[in-house]
Amino acid sequence: GFSWTLPDHPKLPKGKTVALVVLDGWGEANADKYNCIHVAQTPVMDSLKNGAPERWRLVKAHGTAVGLPSEDDMGNSEVGHNALGAGRIFAQGAKLVDLALASGKIYDGEGFNYIKECFDQGTLHLIGLLSDGGVHSRLDQVQLLLKGASERGAKRIRVHILTDGRDVLDGSSVGFVETLENDLSQLREKGIDARIASGGGRMYVTMDRYENDWDVVKRGWDAQVLGEAPYKFQNAVEAVKTLRAETKASDQYLPPFVIVDESGKSVGPVADGDAVVTFNFRADRMVMLAKALEYADFDKFDRVRVPKIRETVKFGHVTFFWNGNRSGYFDETKEEYVEIPSDIGITFNVKPNMKALEIAEKARDAILSGKFDQVRVNLPNGDMVGHTGDIEATVVACKAADEAVKIILDAIEQVGGIYLVTADHGNAEDMVKRNKSGQPLLDKNGGIQILTSHTLQPVPVAIGGPGLHPGVKFRSDIQTPGLANVAATVMNFHGFEAPADYEPTLIEVVDN
Ligand code: 3PG
Ligand code: CO
Image (cartoon, rainbow, N blue to C red; front, side, top):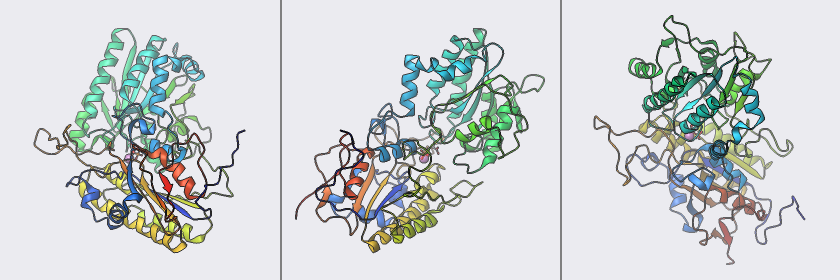
């Protein structure tokens, strides 16, 4: 029968402290000047790579290996941490929404039934990230949703766009807005009153996460719900072009704007009886907006006016990635979650070290305390600074992450423990857009095209520490493992065999 108890590992002991270090946005790529990990001084990660070959290897961190629709989908923190934690490959948000749209099942559910109630008198509002990045959302899904909703009776639709430039090239927002405008004008020809109502850059408007900075959400609320913003335009393409040129803001940081009619009145505030759908399938950067829309006793900022909205739909869940998008503790007596608050109101190229030292020191203390079997850490530098597209700052960020790894590995050394160092996806190892043969692509002026996004590159897995049985080495019979193979490996380090449905462990134990 089924049992929650894992079988003992035949050769590996229990009771070792295991440090699990995830370098965010740290992939493996050819060594050139756009590879910030290569350019940076990273002696600790270098020594792991150049150490025993049976204790360092690469695993896949993108595409189908982490439950994404295709091999063209780059990895990201949500799917990477999900795979690391789950030990199996599950279809992730992007793919689930694709399936629900293709089968039409998305229109059968309870959520859509609520939304439909606004079709007679009210407006359907769609809010989300407008790009084909595939990390939080995808333009083609929005297009299908517009088509599906209008075919099912929506007569007045307002789209509130958030421009990207983080999962896609900076400047690409103009093209996405043009595509959307074109679709909306086709709907208008069919008699549906469909328009873009407001907009703003994702990092400045709405898409904050983990309650880091509520001002971001407030700026979005003012534009989307109240119809108020510092900039007013009659056309969204013109808005994005003008704001990019005049405020010098990148797509990510575009200031909020509203679309107004000839009389200067905003075309799409949210009114009582309207419905709001957030079309991001990834939840982390939509949850705060959802709270503002839904919570009766909300105190994070003055909402001024709270529309009675029929229902908010989120294509995701309010939770933590590693625990399979589940929030809260499994068992408070056995776990402790420590959060080191980030600096707010700056872009991370200004402080590329971020809080790496503080994170490492907390991890070190947890390891040395002897209270925990496993200490799990995420070091964000490579990713967060990589997303700014600032190459020099990203080099500094990689060095800071490497120094943090040293502090953690030293602590493992002291307690006779085991470490596993890996990454959730690539980012800092390639900062330039390339053609198919790997050459940097140039823009109109002969400059390189900076890659702010993640990559399709594999990530390292390095294992070791004094507590690791000397006969442990990576198996050679697993040809293309991915992040989902890490969980079974870690269970082995704790002295257990993984459940049978897990992706296989990366290691074997040879007798010496
Ligand atoms: C973000 O949300 O910052 C980016 O879209 C993806 O980055 P992450 O997957 O590393 O969080
Ligand atoms: Co990232």
